[in-house]
Length: 211
Ligand code: HEC
Ligand code: HEC
Ligand code: HEC
Image 1 (cartoon, rainbow, N blue to C red):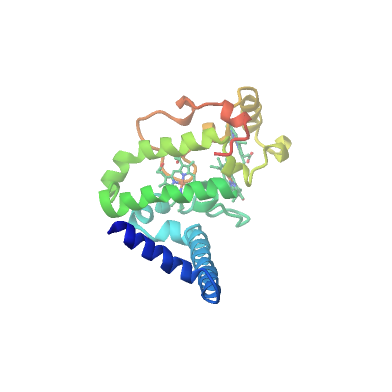
Image 2 (image 1 turned 90 degrees about the vertical axis):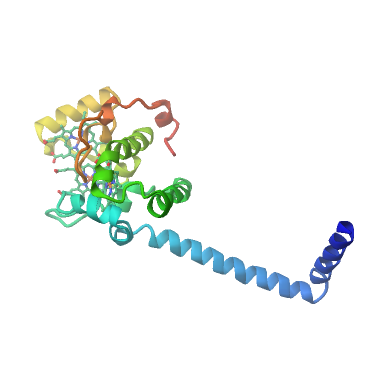
């Protein structure tokens, strides 16, 4: 019985892949791929804007986005800014796609588990969330920061003495930007370890630190 049915299906498929009908199948496939591709591209572009990241869900709006307002990366003398996606979304393709797939986790937290839907829940979880960001940034040698700040092009002469001394130390001790410059866009978590205390595999960095 099952065999008969599968033979029927096969015959039906064959009829659609031969002769004039196959052109219809090819064209439909082509149009469907175009639609799917443009929907995917649009989603990636739209979900990588400051507006989306800071206004779409109250978990961000009432916590990190509010705190970011007025920090040096939001408002400064020259008006050159770093917004949420600049620091949190990888700028190159493969890491970008991986990060976007990870957003399923964020959707789960928002719609299903409601993991940080009040300020109290958010504060209780902040250390864990921050550690996740710090670990990611340490493992990739602060790649997103370096998308704008080119260490080799920083002019020490124009930096404060404190900055010169610490940057020289950073080079010697192989520290990365986030080791020292954390809590620059959001409130600092209270009572846990800082990025310098987090252990990461430093060999990842010498491998190009893609992920
Ligand atoms: C989109 C570009 C961009 C990205 C990404 C970026 N920054 Fe910046 N950053 C700037 C600009 C522009 C300024 C200077 C603002 C001004 O004072 O005019 C700045 C300033 C700073 C300063 C100086 C602050 C001060 O008070 O003078 C530090 C420290 C800094 N950034 C660290 C970081 C770190 C750490 C990261 C990664 C987590 C990062 N930045 C990501 C563009 C960026
Ligand atoms: C060992 C700790 C340390 C590391 C690692 C580090 N910095 Fe700094 N940085 C400092 C200190 C301390 C200052 C001075 C802050 C001050 O004067 O209040 C500073 C100042 C700065 C400034 C402002 C300079 C000025 O004089 O206006 C920028 C921009 C900056 N750092 C970017 C970076 C970037 C980008 C990285 C990674 C490539 C980095 N730093 C790594 C400690 C560090
Ligand atoms: C200049 C870089 C930078 C910008 C701009 C930035 N962040 Fe962050 N963000 C960080 C860093 C670094 C951490 C890790 C914790 C810390 O050091 O504050 C972090 C942590 C977070 C966390 C985890 C909770 C926490 O406080 O640790 C969330 C959520 C977040 N950011 C969302 C956003 C959103 C939304 C925006 C835009 C409104 C934004 N970030 C803008 C650098 C940035």
